[in-house]
Amino acid sequence: MSLNLRNVCIIAHVDHGKTTLVDHLLRQSGTFQQHQTVEERVMDSGDLEKERGITILSKNTSVMVGETKVNIVDTPGHADFGGEVERIMGMVDGALLLVDAAEGPLPQTRFVLQKALSKGHKIILVINKVDRPECSDGKRIQEVVNATFDLFLELGASEEQADFPIVYAAARQGWCTTNFDDIPAYLKKEKTGSLKPLFDLILESVPAPKISDSSNFQLLVSNLSYSEFVGRLAIGRVISGSVKKNTKMVRQGVNADGSPLNQSFTVTQVFTYVGLKQQEVPEVQAGDIAVIAGNEGVEIGDTVSAAAEMAPLPRIIVEKPTLAMLFSVNTSPLSGQEGEAIQSRKLRERLLKEVRHNVALRFEEAETSDQFRVLGRGELQFAILIEQMRREGYEFMVGKPLVLYREGPNGERMEPNERAVLDLPEEHASDVTRIFQERKGTLVKYEALPHMEGIGRQRVRLEFDIPSRGLLGIRSRYLTATRGDGLFSSYLTEYQPHRGEIPHRGNGALIADRLGDSVEYALLSLEERGMLFIGPGIKVYEGMIIGENAKDNDMNVNPCKEKKLTNIRSAGAEFLVRLAGIRDMSLERCLEWIDEDEWIEVTPKNIRMRKKVLAGNLRSVKRSERIT
Image (tube, rainbow, N blue to C red; front, top):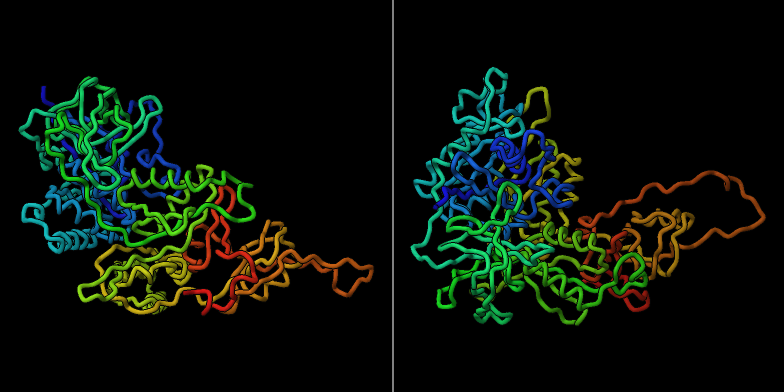
């Protein structure tokens, strides 16, 4: 018996309400029982996702709408996790494009929409958060609809794709409507609504899965999972045929050198998605999303076929990385005291494991045996990987993110460029423009956003074309300039000729010259030299960075110097003196701050910065000599 199916994904910019909408879709479809307690943002299951309020990994769920099963994939909204988006687009036939009714389409909206349109998917536009104060007169909502239509045309949408249905929603309140004129009645509680219009549109607009004429089973592995009981799980949409438990299959993949590989195995268990859970079933038919156990070597992009003679499906292709970061074993004097000081073999295995699960990352061997290079999309992607490894108990070191260059058609050096979109209060626009122009950014758009009378200040949206190099370390300066009230996002546009040198950090470092514990008396005397990163009672070692020098050169200092004890009391000696201030250096701040001759030492308990050469007599303090 064939099953009525629809496969859709939800795509949106960060914080436009995507995961909240999925919560209410699950509740209103009857996925949860009346008495069942369900936490908010249930699809953001990882600790890091809940802490940061963003979706990092794409996840599957399903709901029953009448007699039709709707598989829903929640995708990340940040461009750094674009690899997650690209590999699940082949699992679905349509998409819900979620756009904030006040902010309109933003960079990641554009990035993800482009991937969906290129696959030929039918798009349903969901204008979310119509209950925001800025949208009370309805003018902004119409402006956002028009801006989204312009974006469709700009991205080359077909006539059919550009004729998209529109739903106006307040996902947090759990209602939507296809009639623009009904919005005020819902906001005033004169009408009560639900998400039924959206369910109806999915059934009406999204086509049923295309199924191959072949009766032989074939599946493209788009995601991986792991079970303690049955091992590695391959997840993907069944292109043709069906799969049952204990049937013989062939994994069609590639070896490390890229040559074809055929590996026979037996399917030990078959699962499909029922709500948020994987439920074992006797059979999964063509068009549905299946989870297959039985092969420990399966990788993303492999094809699982009924016979080796079948041609494998095209492998998943993602855009090439733009940044590289060096990972190293921890060689500091405090190595192994706060976590597991892993050997190079274990660090290599952990990074390879990550690369296998995330097709947007690449792995390369470095010049030395205890260092490895990981290639990725952005600083946030690296920061998430580092934080995950840190929480697993590992100790290791990472270097400064470096941009990957290409050679142009005439042999010139080409570098990646990005479009940075900034949303900030108008009074900070001139300061922010100066910061971005210093980093070789070019202002291409200045737009006044709708003003909220009596609620806040006038905000503007600036768009800059800027080299990826210029964005490294700019986020903290931007937040400082806007007093923390600015929004920042970017996406890769193209490679352009190298734009020349960009200033990074004008200040040198204050570097400990010995092993010991920092002392308040010593730190008080160092305050006038610059900004400190540590307080008293902190373990330090020679070569460890304890602060930022006020001048451009490095300075070796003694943070462990204690006050000499005498029996002579001086006037004012008993006054209480305290450190004026210490800058808290988070992982992201460290990634922005360090230079190429420095490491970030990552342990489960601490994040430190240090020089690559620890001994003070073996390294220069002059900036011109230490930065190549």
